[in-house]
Length: 635
Ligand code: CTP
Ligand code: MG
Image (cartoon, rainbow, N blue to C red; front, top):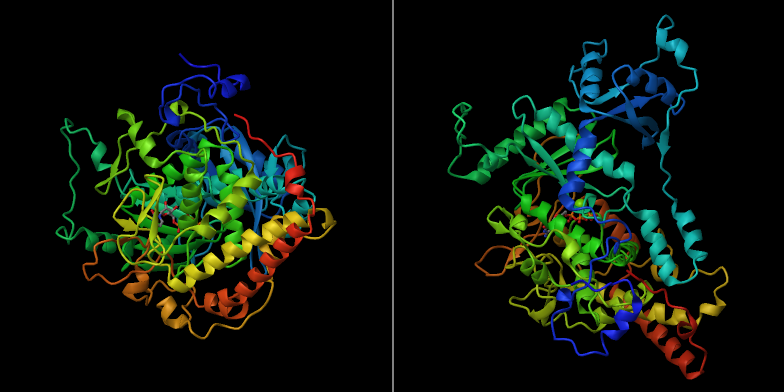
């Protein structure tokens, strides 16, 4: 029997009557459909819907927004147009206006592409793809007469608030919880951003479809795990065919070539990726700066898709990364506080240069997200359950294995119960910094599988267990210096927030809450010299030389640096430490030299903040926190 969960009285009563001691996830309480704020959409369903949209979509470069009516009429010749989105890209001085058109069905797109022509010059490669441009209408063309007719075109233009607008919004927020929520609302991946990511995947699928009609490109990482910001990169997995899902009773079997290095699947994959990177570089519109990083643990092709305006990382045989994203998506959907909190902390880390868009010996967004999840498992009561709970509750439909890794966990959140934790976002943010300020990073590692810490099995500055490949540490790349910086920033943030509470009545138009925590996002609070004790050359494991932007030569990345997705096996079998994810351009060095605040500098600041906080408390000033109505999250 299910308790009528929405009646608050029952929540109170639960503690007054004697109930058998069962884990909180097994309480007979309904999983409310909107704990993350929206109806829960299973990951598979979401991915399949987005892929279908991409299969019906056409990306058209136009002269400008006024062309939308014209474009609508042109496209309507081939079938019903469902939606249109307008956006602009800018490279240097070149601005391009783009419209993403979604047809009602894939056949309409097919008809449109059948009629599309190649440009009249011999110097182009006449490739067919759903990336097109709209030429000016000919005077004699019947379309030209209709072009000015006001069309029923409903075109969506998404506006992402600028940093200044966001700052203003944060200044005007009622409290810290509202600020955190606002950051999430302003910075989360938009509808168009999500569509363009799936569409960019679709482009590569189409490019390979002649030889591999079943090729499937799936996005993973922040593009789909619900923690992605606008402009986040696009991580993709390419699977040439779903060989596991073939009907073995069929009599006709495709002839196929034996792969040249069948004995070594890794070499085979590297060869395939070389060919694919050549195809992207030579034939696929919009792909630029194609680079191969094939010596990496997970070999990748990096490129820019200029027309959808995103950085792309393409890998093969990496489906476990996709399931990892699904797991993060589920955690983001479990409670409506998870995503805003992760966003606020990722933004704090970015603005304080704790994380970086480039790979190196610092904490990554992925590791930071796991830290937030771990903390939310350790609140009292926990906001989210540990992964082992999801594993225990998994049914037959949830069984998944990828690359020999067991990726089985509960996927339908409806059977999971809600948390009793009622803390506001503000409390959770403060709690995060307090928790990690006290955490014994030296001796203990973090596991979201058990939701508990453990004695580190090997010496590694920061140890965060990979939830799917448990013998790996996702933060092996982090050096002691970088961990020290993270810890100092955490302490600084903790006391900064504490001091901010003391001053809350004096704010006026002064930056407060998140704004005071971040400092000025683009200009760090102080420009400090580089700490000479750190050898940045060594840190980056890369030769400081510019790479020609469009070169398709394999990058001269040392094997140490080149190990992407940097988990390291625990057994120290003599394997060299491998560094983390992405290619590390030299700009980071420059940026660090100019802007980074070193731990030693921050320590002084923290001491001052602590002194202020103690002083204010001693003066008996009213603590605004006690007065504030906490935002309670009900579900
Ligand atoms: N991943 C992993 N193990 C790692 C690093 C990454 O499984 N050690 C997977 C995670 O699913 C991660 C994805 O690869 O989300 C992409 O990695 P990355 O691009 O580094 O992180 P994102 O989560 O996409 O965050 P960002 O916005 O910084 O790109
Ligand atoms: Mg990413």
